[in-house]
Figure 1: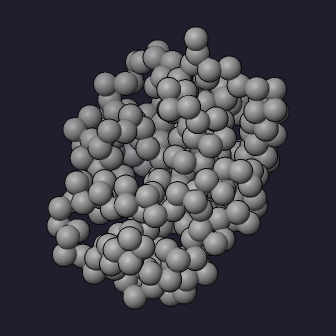
Figure 2: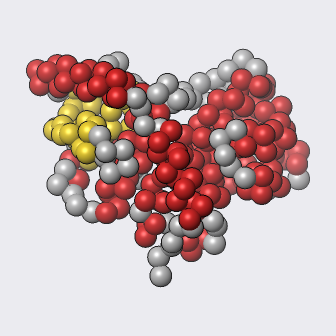
Figure 3: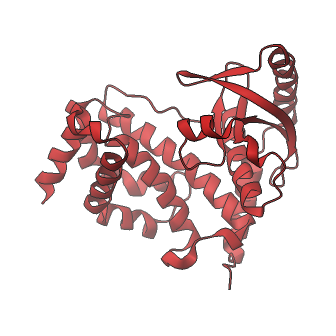
Amino acid sequence: MSYRPTTAERKRAARLSRMLLPPKRVHDAYVDAARIFLGVVDLLPFVRYQDQMLQLEGLRWHESALFGREYLVAYVDDEQLAGIAPGCDAISTVTTSIPLVFAPTRRRRSRSESFHSILEHELVHVNQALLGLAPTKERCPTVERSLAGFFDNVRVEYQANLLQLTTWPRLFPDKYGLPLEHWSALRGWSDALESAVCGVFCPPELIAAFLDRLPVVARARFAAFGVSGRVATWFSTDHTRLVKTALELQLTREPALAEDAAFLSAVDWLHGQQ
């Protein structure tokens, strides 16, 4: 039997979707900018993502089931997308003109419920960007600012997962035995922590202090975007194991991290906990 969201979960998701719906004037400005973008890429079908130029193989307007508005989706070569986002069927980014969703060309005519829900997940991120709520992953000079950046990244993924899986509960992986709120928070936390142990949020010399502070501030930071104290306590209690898992995953993906100063600082912190 598939997961059935509780009444409280549905109400929370409804409030969140209203909160993340940009005012009409903001969406209208996005549509105007998107039309200009379409004119430009019609002549030069390329867009920069991080350090790469992606060739666009098609664009279409997608009417969002979550927000009832249209958003632009760009389709790129399957292998090119897999190279920049392994294992992802869609990603969102902010170009120089508009926030944009990239999807692989093979999915261009897909009617899959799973893929549709993934697109909607990414459109949550588009709205976050339109509302000025999309964080960046950047290294900060203090522990407190690094923590703020970390939890901003947790927040956006928590919100996107919560909305996606409340709306399409059949796709919720309830085999792990975690409630929806907990699973959504875990998705955000894991993604941010895997970046943190590589020094994305702070320089190597601050990694230990950052990891020390993380469980201390978790409850208050989670509460700021509606995650329960019970879930926050789980993250604080399981902090060392979660850091260990993040280190192992990142080293498997990028063996060269074994010589990275920030990564080694996180390893030293972990050794100090054992």
